[in-house]
Image 1 (spheres, rainbow, N blue to C red):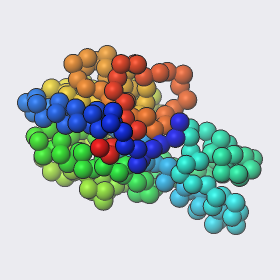
Image 2 (image 1 turned 120 degrees about the vertical axis):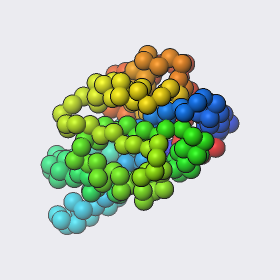
Image 3 (image 1 turned 90 degrees about the vertical axis):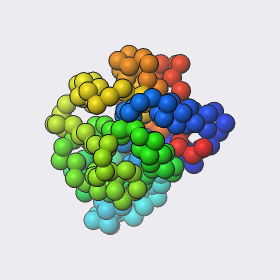
Image 4 (image 1 turned 90 degrees about the horizontal axis):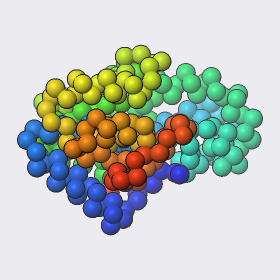
Length: 237
Ligand SMILES: [Mg+2]
């Protein structure tokens, strides 16, 4: 299922309004927000890497790849959707890997439309904002810069970024561990994430909080988000 950054629907508006209502009703509520596939559309980082590869190799076919061609995390599927020979996926794998997890390349991501405004409203209402990402420590500085450039509250009181200590660590285990540190900040009122395993974990740990499943793309793990969780496909109301 592909990202829909410009999606608007009555149900999405209702979920986002509830996010604002819930986050502002508690005292010093903590909002825990994911980045890739949540506040940021990281397909643009991918497109940039493919175009760098195309420039290096002179293979212009990769310029055909557009955001809508990414429907999952499988590069051959993306290339097929763009009409590019899937054999190229193996050729570019190493080039892609060296760049996708580099802190400089996260600056090519696009903020999801409406996401920064929502987070500014949450922050303005008195919430503590925690950006909890599976990006590893080496991507921390670049991620801070990406947050600033896109207008997310950062470098101000009640904001913090938590990145993964090591690249190899499992994302969901790391987020589970980070929740202990986050819980010490105050009552956690909101979680938003695009990974089913993560939203299910948050829901189990904090059943009283609002947990929103962001339906963009996610890892190929055969896990489904708990059916009762509210869902959004973008941040526009
Ligand atoms: Mg994510």
